[in-house]
Length: 445
Ligand code: ADP
Ligand code: ADP
Ligand code: MG
Image (cartoon, rainbow, N blue to C red; front, side):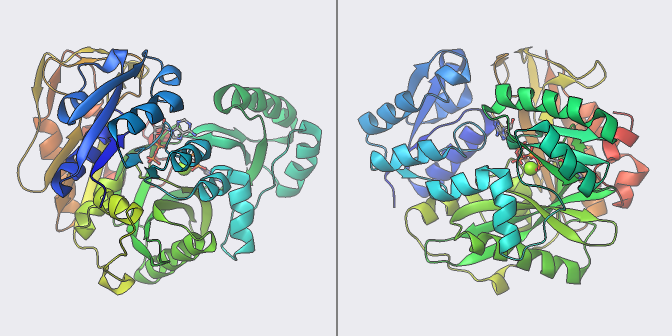
């Protein structure tokens, strides 16, 4: 096992990883930007080093600074968390060159799945159902010909997109060329790649994803699914497991398909296969996230398996001691993302000092965050400041528990979306479990 791990991330996920290391008796090195010198991950790690100024391009994405710190501190592995460098094949390669284990898949897999258009092709060849669509285009006119074949409405998607960005709905042929050109230049600015591909717009649809763990010996296991259809601008707000949309037969078939998808690329470590489920129960591969997911705690709650600890063990060469037959998720878990923003004021991001903080507790209540009373939320990073997760025997009990926990949460001095989350949980349609990705728009938010 590794003796020391560097965590190349910030916020709640850096804290989550440090906690896993502590439980495993592994020393931790944290890195931080000048804006994060008072951040929780800096205080919690055994050693902490400043790696640059506030902008992520000069700190958390600064590969040279991070790798130099790892080498100088004698870290044997780097955990990249999610976002930032977690899906960066070049970074994974550089780790290898420095003889440091990258806690995640091989660079080749990151490259293959990070290109969403290539991932589609790979899955199609492996016999996994994909959404009707196209390969990537640079040219709008060529794309239009293909668009007419697919039919409208359709989505234009950035080949290198992520985090819900780089997706555009085109309702008719007339606006296609304009939208394609705008999307392409936006994508070039955001992701350094202007190539776009097309997908038929599935409506109504639910986002259901499957958590995978795969060791270096090819043992590939599905740890259940997560329902993530409560989204705003293609960004998840609430996630739950199990999905209320699946029949027992559908569920088995979905897990099997996800395992086949992972096996098709010799996947290793933790990963998530995202699917869209249509009204008739058909599901289609959307993308694979080759990293730990924000919403991984809901899977941990229903399976009792610590995903971060297993990521570390797999990277260290340990085989999985359980098989698919051992995976029998129990109960129901829900996660609400707590964002520092004002949903009732056009989602304006909020930063500032948390003057008063009370975190809910009690049986089956978990709060993953990096905030504390007196903490100043810097304006440079993601607005997600915490995740409230609850676990209960049934879905309705979990909803009641989440309402109780959210009502208890106090974070003064900043705006956050706790009230919006309460309003969603109280919604009839959400309560029924019969909702899809249009939920937030129909909810008026
Ligand atoms: P999850 O699917 O795990 O919920 P999200 O899509 O919410 O993940 O993304 C997790 C984090 O990573 C967010 O902070 C998001 O902004 C960021 N992120 C995801 N993909 C990219 C990308 N391709 N480029 C930059 N940031 C990304
Ligand atoms: P990202 O890499 O940004 O996470 P995804 O390809 O996973 O992008 O799509 C993000 C979200 O956009 C999905 O969760 C879903 O709500 C919506 N979406 C993506 N593709 C389609 C589609 N073909 N039809 C309908 N909705 C889609
Ligand atoms: Mg996605």
